[in-house]
Length: 330
Image (cartoon, rainbow, N blue to C red; front, side, top):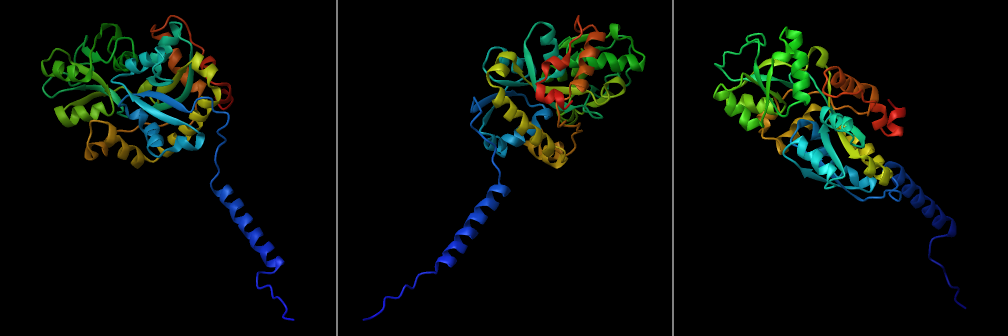
């Protein structure tokens, strides 16, 4: 009788192969970890943004689909100004809004319930300042005792930083004649000599220099405004209470994106995709700092300057606006 021969692999060989496969799968799970998605209450998050340079890290995160690993789809809702971004937040058209810190803290002083989700930007040299056009006759902050200065809105960040800087230069801040207008109107008003200077931030400073030959009269990111916390991301108190895990995931990825922005090349490359600047101009833009933590102590500085400058009537406790987990890290 012919004996049947089993030509398959011996049992110990099959066992060895199985162990190797399992080890490889385990290694892959270590190399490419995924955050748990089950606890995220809201899978799609709408974030209002403007063309401000401050939003570069968030745009990087969306472009690279970094939020996907947190179980989130983030949609950027473009707004022409930070006032309109905040309005979209108050009306429920977005879940989170990019805003300058003065604007959101002023809203808090007026009764708005807010939870801050992350800091966006800290001013650096020449990232905000007073600019004028050639031949204006306003060559120095002290050239006129009562200069006419345009800002994006009255009682906002421009007013606060300009008053502080001009006081340091020896100009009576109460003598300044402020008027509010958008960028294009500022340039027209400067050309007609209706104002002496316009308060701008980057990338609008570079745009004014490139398109209109503007120059900086004084850098308002100096003195008391040195390393000034300019902007943040905010959600309403109701949204924060309803979607805590979702916003925690948003903050985690935003922190990673802010860390990417420590490389100025990353910022300049994406800046050319959403600002009015071409790549050449974007390469020359003055950059500030993109903070990687939500620091209540740092932001309290803004609130206190607002109170001292009588922009708000009462002192705001910023720690009450920061999530408990972020507060522990302040």
